Length: 481
Ligand code: 4AD
Ligand code: MG
Image (tube, rainbow, N blue to C red; front, top):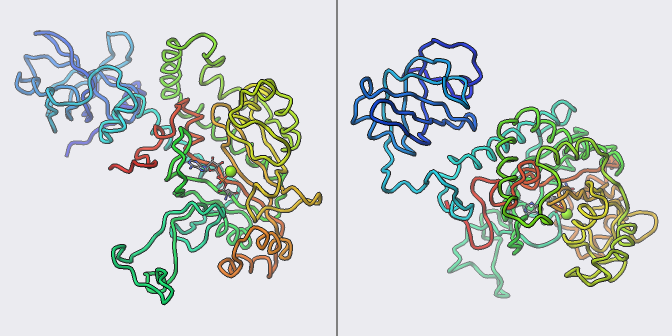
């Protein structure tokens, strides 16, 4: 095969006059009897490369097959472009059609398609400008996650996808079983006999790698996980997926305040990385948002452009306050007094809904907020119990437009306190004996948090539906492809 140069590299190069070969998919072809202009995109950049095809050089039957969506290889001289909007173009000496795309049937037209429509054509969705940009940024963010932690001496710790425990105690899990669902073996009591299943016990897809992550931190000091996470919660919202990716660092000898510092530094690092490395894609998404906002009433338009919003988060300290302080603010807030919240704030102890989180971030503080010290009852069993006897050392980071983006805590490292709360909450100790062992042999103060990767991508790209920042979304009633 002929060596091929990626379009991103060509558009950056200053060298012209050389012979090159490019391969990609045709975005558009326009022109006339005398000359054709082909916009070619190969996914390496949002920008397409212009290929000038002279019908006296390129055969007519070849040009006929150069239609939107077709895959082609084009060779020719790289020259400075006369046209506006591009620095270089190729004057084609040969064009080979690798895969034609019947123009009568090709589902993508050179016009705007709705995101709902595009979700149904998984193979073409990433060929659009918007999704190309989103998925390139998604890649950059994943790379930046590893870079950040590697530089800090954290180890990438692989936790299992199939587990026998419910880390969050929420019970919203997908069962993993190799039994025949039509004819499962039964115990004497008529229950399904999982002893005869593949793992000889009940197993599920993981809802979090944290508990296994803690075992890593109790030996390697600082670890992080980054993997798929599954939740069978029936939340059909723009911020929930049944399969999402989570990053969970776990640090020995960190208290809650150290953990908040790390989380804030981490989020800012990711944003800075996107600004530094994804400028073209961000510029496209920013323009897309501005165009979209033109259709909205003035009052609903956002005050900041996408990149200004990203810079704003970088330049400001996150506000830190306790759950109790937040409840005070919410109780006295206008929407609460005017009964505008769907879930009114009754008093101390109620769980915060996303409408409350977004009020704090978007209306009251107008900055990212870290809420700490939540009531024990509304949080998980493993969080460290505060001396007041009613709160735990938890922290949630709330972002504008998103709500909760990070959830974390200092962990309860004292065995008696931990088992006491497990009993109160009805968390079975026998199943988690391996976890409790960390508190029996060389227990140490430690903390960690979880960042929802897709929620972070939502924030960075300015997309509004979490289904549109993952290539193959899984949501209630939907697991195509
Ligand atoms: O707050 P969560 O449930 O925390 C944990 O799972 C802890 N074990 C983390 C830890 O301390 N190591 O989830 C963490 C984050 C949320 O803040 C949110 O960003 C994301 O994961 N998340 C989801 N993202 C998409 N779809 C869902 N259904 C999500 N559920 C949680
Ligand atoms: Mg949470």
